[in-house]
Image 1 (cartoon, rainbow, N blue to C red):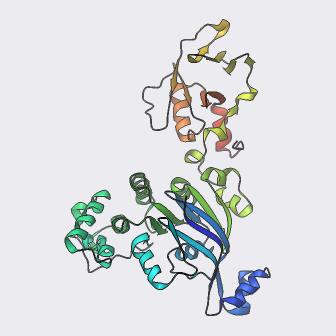
Image 2 (cartoon, rainbow, N blue to C red):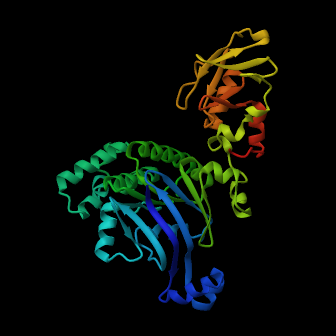
Image 3 (tube, one colour):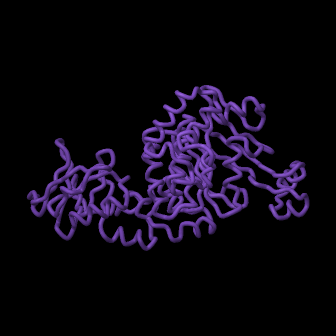
Length: 396
């Protein structure tokens, strides 16, 4: 189910948006519309679905419209045309025509926001900053402080609750902002470049913390970023924008493998593929293997064959003799410490490139990719070299 459904959305900044909308319909550019009307097109005909529980990252250069789109989701930017629906239980709220009372309730109970510059109250302690949204909801002091303490513990700042924002580092201040948003217990969290002001090490740590918290809380997060590596790391889906338009929307792997145009290609040109690409996009397809009935040659150098029998997969060598190797089923999250040169790993084609390289380093053997009890391919050094050089296979 979608948490947010956007259809043909236009956002125009100015007192009289209609002339700008008319010019948009005529195919005029933002610059031409601004010159003719004095208005600014922030979002141009965007349609986008954000599923419940996902992290959708809005990306683009400065002025691309990503923050303008984000702020339309909680009504900070008004909808000029189109629809923007936020799911609220069994009902949905259309930001295009909801009244102020409904909008206020949406902001207080359904949608929370984390700002780029933290937006902490300098006169309030860390604890009271986290509890501020609950205070606006009318929650009693004892209860809101208890809830705030729980969220401070989640971000490992429980010992700083009596301090003031100026006594905290930038990374710690951003943790306070996260805790404040989570304390509201809103289903949807909007994050407008929340980590961009931090140094790379702290930024990476907070990205990890966000992913860890997301596993526990399962919020719907719309996250604005101009950093592709950040988007690829945290995003379930990525939406790339230019000049107010949505250029491409897809999974991180889809964005890297099949960029829609030169604008997107330039974005992904220097991408680190380790955390993005999956085995299915790297593998040598099983259809190219030598086959003998229900046996496939998975390593020609060592004459290793994989055979599927009633009791499962079995490894054989020359003259059908079993080699001195152990087949091991490996899943994401498992340790690799037990792997060695006598271990031949079978795993899902959804394995990350980073995990696959680590396994290959430990074993020195091909990695067998099994999907629905079918051998679909293998991973070897050549496949990794091709990926590092940007020569990807198309995902099936």
